[in-house]
Image (cartoon, rainbow, N blue to C red):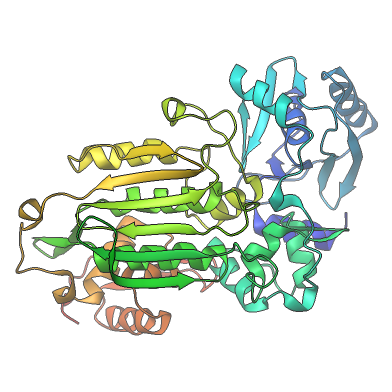
Length: 452
């Protein structure tokens, strides 16, 4: 590993294959087995959780202790290299050929950027699936580096809050574990190919709004044949367009309330994209809006070992690389808490938990409240609420929100959001703290006009 590669990994932060530790302790045996049980990866000693280099020096004694810890694991964890990289120590762990691996504290795995102890059931699943190469991991033979979009990489970096300087697509995808010596992996194609559906016909999401409840008469339809980030974004825009909304006004604050909490829908759409079985050709992710329900379907049904009764208690990842990318974009919470968040947001809104089933597809069905319950305040509809007020609401709720995310959530262009932010800054309603990359917006104490 070179200093340039280290700089890129520091910019990208912790993830499925990267762990930062401020200093060496014997407890890193948990991270050794977690990486060996997942896709392999690197532990950097002398780096804090904010990707800042604290410094650690590799000594002969430290190297001997690390090797001893790896040998004491059951079976011994394969280490490819231990080296001093600048002011950090890099411990490179290979993906284990004899999964599952354990240390004195038990069995551990990597869940996005977190090392998590495994349950008995999860250990059993790892035993059964140890020899399988998932679809997302396989090299895509029909794609070359000229097919990768640098613009899509740029957008991803902006949403992930990563500043990596001038790097080639090959360097970036390799550091994210989306490419290897064998070529670009299917996961890399699904995120960054200019035309991902050309080599992968199943890369598609179909969004449909129906009249009535029978799913026959189509009011609106949109087929999204693009990357996974775009599928997720377009699905949320479609749902917001076809769901009812009321607005609550308290003083200077105005807040939209959708008939089904957006937080629950975001988690459900992200879950469908992340856990879809992309190896099933001739299928599409489906988002359906009916008069009485919203239905989200992803091909593949329950992942192996998962059932309706275990949802929320057992974390099973069909696509670890795709999940890691969505976590980096802050689209999902790490550590598999999605269904718990759905439950909490639905309970807070006084709505029932959605119906979940599987028939070859994983299906989650949200009941829409009757129209009489949605009436609330019909005079205050979404179209009458100024974009500037919505932007202030988003900044208040999400400190580190970026312009592209604001644009997605408000169904606006990034330029329209930039214009509103310029007006808000002029009136003293918001201000920018820090640089364009890495800074954030704050709401000032001065109360500017809410109708700019």
